[in-house]
Length: 251
Image 1: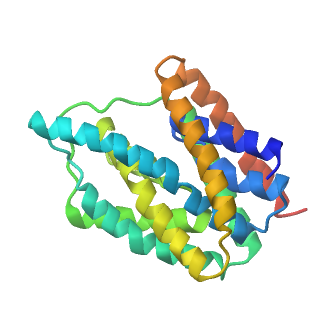
Image 2: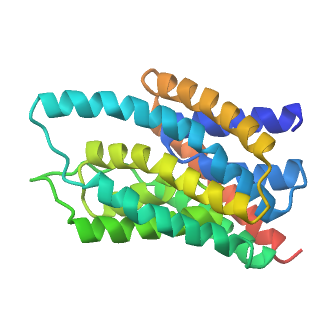
Image 3: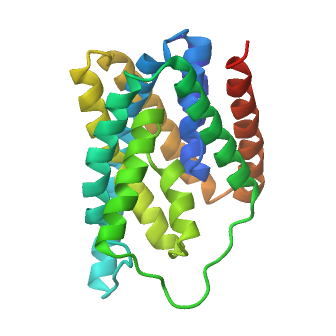
């Protein structure tokens, strides 16, 4: 992986930490700058999210301990969400090696455009009593997010956050769930890609290190920058990426 690709992956990690919507840029970057075939780029990227996912879970553990000590509770059964995500991500990762390149490009284009358009909308605060999510619904949400993440090589939050926000779940519970789902999705999808013989462990580890460094820096910067303005710029970049991927379907 050359320096320009490393810099772009580092930026994607920074955007993940600062805004939560940068992970969808990684697979297109590997395809455009490194010339990787789409299934191989998705395989390496899927496992790479395990490193920032593990770091996010470690931070979440501390928050959960403090919340439990204070008598707090989450309106979302995160364990059920994770149990649903594991088979979903296995199925999605398996599907990558059976779908044509055009289908994968189209899926990434739709995901990038959708993420960008969502990011242009101002975040709306949830008013009123907290909305709860049942265990069966959490299992179904996890399976859906795992399937989409496995197919696209993304970490999970880019799909889970808009679904939970549309369900009017409180923002703290949404953030906690988005952090928790990354590691099981990455490990499940990575295991399936390894079984399929498409996983480059060295590249996945290198990508994961850059993403981890970038996400830590992005989380630090998010408390000090005007994130709303940054999110608009990222959203425009995602829209441009989606349009570019869509154009590649016809040229």
